[in-house]
Length: 89
Image (tube, rainbow, N blue to C red; front, side):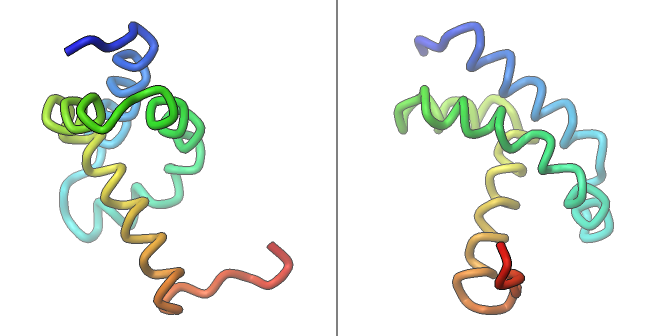
């Protein structure tokens, strides 16, 4: 797979951070307040990668995949109205 050094470095950074937290509900609760600091790095990877590259990174880095799934769950919760977003944002 043809990935840039930056794509791999950022995916590894996110993976290492996420893997500090256990894959449990409590671990996800502990991880949640820390994800903001890694959202820019994730967006940079996402914007510079094609779908095949993203799939490859998800397969290589479990924490990177878990990060993406957590973001997806948050977005779905907002879309469904389960998670309320303050009107001033």
